[in-house]
Amino acid sequence: MSTRVAPVEPGSRPELAGIERAIRAERGRVSLLYQVLLNSAPIAEGWEKMLTAVRNRSSLPAGLRELVILRVAVLNHASFEFDAHLPHAGRAGVSAQKIDALKDDRLGDAFELKEQLALELTDAMTREVHVPDALFERLRGQFDDRGLVDLVATVAAYNMVSRFLVALKIGK
Image 1 (cartoon, rainbow, N blue to C red):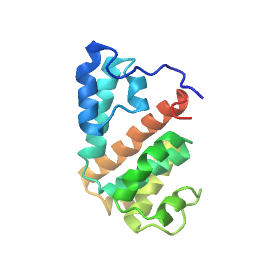
Image 2: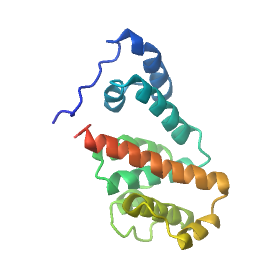
Image 3: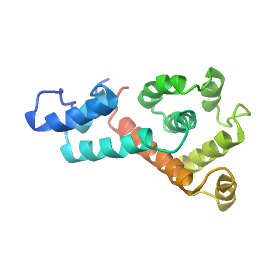
């Protein structure tokens, strides 16, 4: 199935050269997601800066970050995002058991407390948007203020990513 918006072939529009360079510098390539984003240069540029900060400049441990990203992808049925982040999760040391557990509606007991709380937050933000005060207080016991901002921003950003992918049928 093709995407709902035609991808921009890298190198085909000289005015996008700088943005493409920045994407390659951070990602190593211009993926299908970014090729679609290149239809709007300001969005592609802002997206790259925001997602680079979330993925590469966050205080969250890489494994925790990837668990959250994969869980958002599962909840939003964003298979392209899930598949794109499996290698990152593996490099971050996330076990196959934990990855499988992310696919279960109830999550199970495969996760450490900090991971479990981060995933509960992910579920609340993704499914309901509202985060119960009691959950947030439990999160405060595991994360400092920067960690809380980084965690919430990661969940929010990857909800944006997965919803963009699903709406435009990217990678289906």
